[in-house]
Length: 210
Ligand code: GLN
Image (spheres, rainbow, N blue to C red):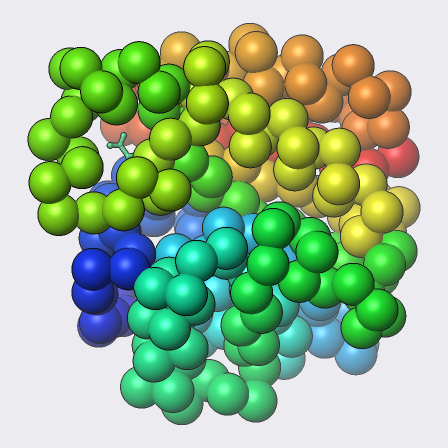
């Protein structure tokens, strides 16, 4: 998306497929006029790539990003400074939404982006194990089915989204039906939509809070 970012051992190197999530979220923000500016959360921010892209291109948006590890948070904060986005992008640290406890975000968020770890532990230890050579396991390991973090975020996001606020995920190949089911099982989200990449694979799944 045209940004120059720092990377480091604490966070994975942003992949091109994540531009689909960035572009989809940006399009949604632009389609939602809002006087006071949009309120956005980027959960599992890694190097801060999505938060910085939205902060750079969505005029007037306030963005709260979060990740679990010291390494990712340090790289994300460096990128926010490097791009001069300190006034609009805030990086917290904690276990998913725990980093936002008590700062008044509940029920106010227009849009959440999340590129969680989504490779199953077994694949990560076998056919995808080269991912672990230079990048942290926490960035990729999505538990036994690769969907553990999507599941937690679908559940925890409900408290933070305002009615009509949208949760956008990046997903791995062929995870779309399962992620759709995670949304539907809560009974708290509307119709589940998808975006496909240039070869027709669904890589972004999203739904709005009722
Ligand atoms: N996009 C990465 C891959 O498929 C995985 C990133 C992730 O788990 N979020 O290699």
